[in-house]
Length: 144
Image 1 (cartoon, rainbow, N blue to C red):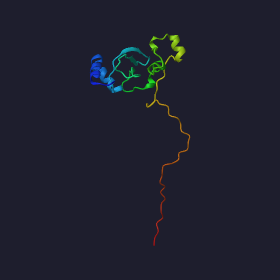
Image 2: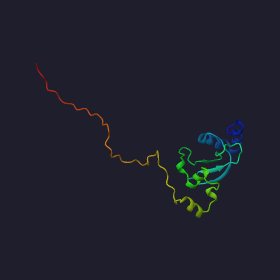
Image 3: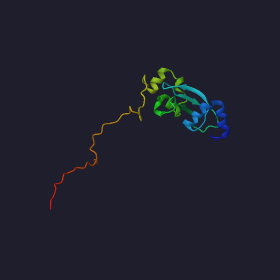
Image 4: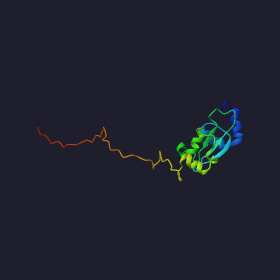
């Protein structure tokens, strides 16, 4: 079983209160394992060999930015490792192997989705509906 009270208490003891509460807020679970490396964004990657963990749930990332974590804020090599595409983490690869395998750029672009810097395309389509603008016509006074 993956989630139990004893396992949660054990992980609180190993990780500490602050890191465990952060994990509960981000991944809704507490995990303890070995530090595997850090990417250019400052995200930290971990792996555990605990037999209590569910299969394919033994690797995880702890994002640097707590309030704005996004899967687009990780390098391709680390994403490939998290998805169990390889057993070798990018921190153990040589720079030549990294460049050949993942075709990395020098500076990783930041994803600006849901921010003020997000790309918004210009719309050229004619709208189906338009707002109603009242037109007031002055009446002539009629005398009877």
